[in-house]
Length: 72
Image (cartoon, rainbow, N blue to C red; front, side):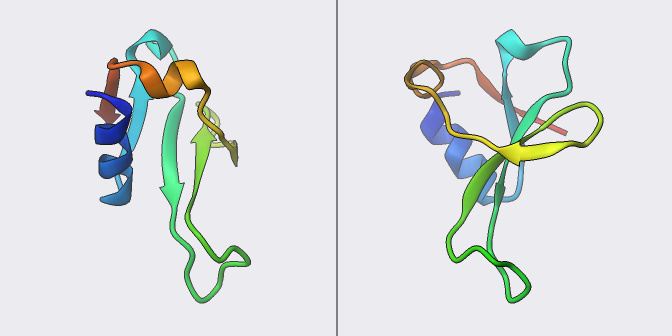
């Protein structure tokens, strides 16, 4: 799937990753703000194998690839 499909999947609450990241549990998710959030708009974050989360900004290369997939 392409990055547009990945964004649509994240808007549905799913996690995505690129196939070149196989062998890791890294995944990208979208955080939607709620009444408890300090953020006012949605943002992307990456989560690693240990559950550590940090904000994530896709590179131009990430956005142009078509190797995105939904992960559990």
